[in-house]
Length: 290
Image 1 (cartoon, rainbow, N blue to C red):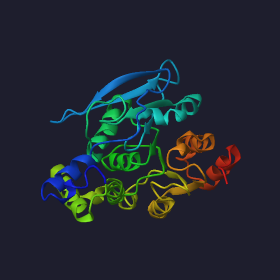
Image 2 (spheres, helix red, strand yellow):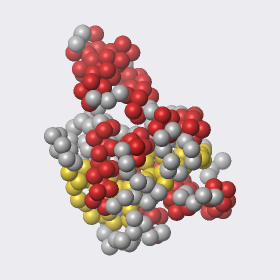
Image 3 (tube, one colour):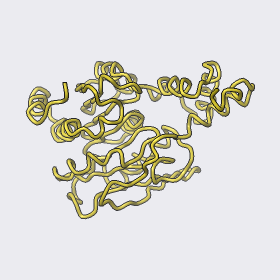
Image 4 (cartoon, helix red, strand yellow):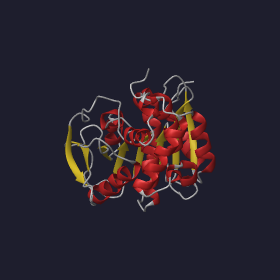
């Protein structure tokens, strides 16, 4: 029996507990900053005073170049995005990896998509508007929301993007064996507490308001977020394309050299208006695993 299974039967307590746990990151224990990186805090305005820690390679890359933000997923850490740092720096970019609130080296026990969105907006105020954002899983709606709030970005790369809050709710309910009626009440409680509708995280809806060039990288064997989610996002996004891998799953895809090369090459060329030339350039650089 799941340790919380009996509690799901207690009226009132069940939905409060489910809401609290849903906003509590669990997962990757690795909170190691990317190698050779300096770290500083970004303090967000507002009554909560949330804090996020960001990392930048020491004495590498161009301090005057526009930054590229690297955003991990729910329960992850900045260290998961470390594979992109060298490739970005080699091309003259500033690689800024971010530990979202309550993740990695950032303090806190709970967080939410609005707080994480504000981290990106705060990072842009500190480091400048980003040339691009590479975001994994939950990081994708965080980035899309920041862009909707006015963050100017040259191009976006979403890797195994979480398509919606409803998808995350279903995943959590399955893992924690939360009855669907309890999970629905918990979701409505979260909406009321945060003052937003859960559909604000729907990437298909956000796509229709987003003009930034987008590349989705997604593994067909991903068991956390289905590849069809990226396909639907790309169909809805005005300037988007998708590259699919096989055998990498949801997290190993972040360490694959071909994925890293495709992502970084897209940021270098994704702002151009000739997508066919871009596709040829990507294909010439490396081939994704068949």
